[in-house]
Every structure is written in C-alpha cells, then in structure tokens.
Length: 75
Image (cartoon, rainbow, N blue to C red; front, top):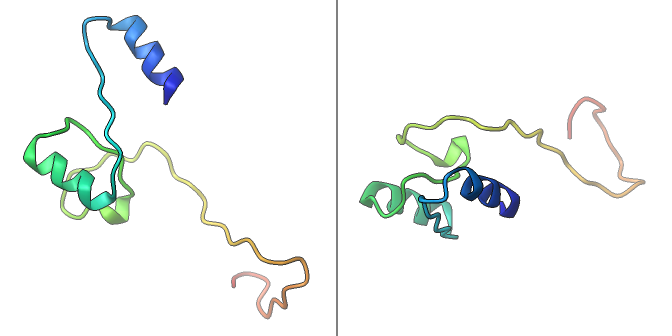
C-alpha cells in the first residue's frame, strides 16, 4: 500500500488519501454510510454490495511434512 499511495499522490497531488483499517463488517458499514469511497473485501464477505474482483488468490492448506493424506487431490 505505501508504494501504491505514494505513486497515486505523485500523479494526483490534489487528492488526499485516508486509509481506514477494520473488519469486513466495519468496511461494509463504512461503504453503506458513505464514510469511505471504496473498500477491500473478499467476494464472499461483500454480500449485496457491488464488487469488482481485483485479484484471485489460490486457497492453500499448510500441513506438517508427515501428515497422513488419504486423498491426494484434496484434504
């Protein structure tokens, strides 16, 4: 985020950015109340809010080296 905001400020010096940090519930409420202009949410947490996916992340599971896996395709 620091380099993103720095680059944005270089291109648009008259626009200020204020970053809020909160839970998905906080972000949804801030958007609904107009406190923030945009928020970063997961697709599953957005509910009925319109959302544009910026990045699709692969879901992974970290397990011990000798974990007994009964199905090699999934856990």
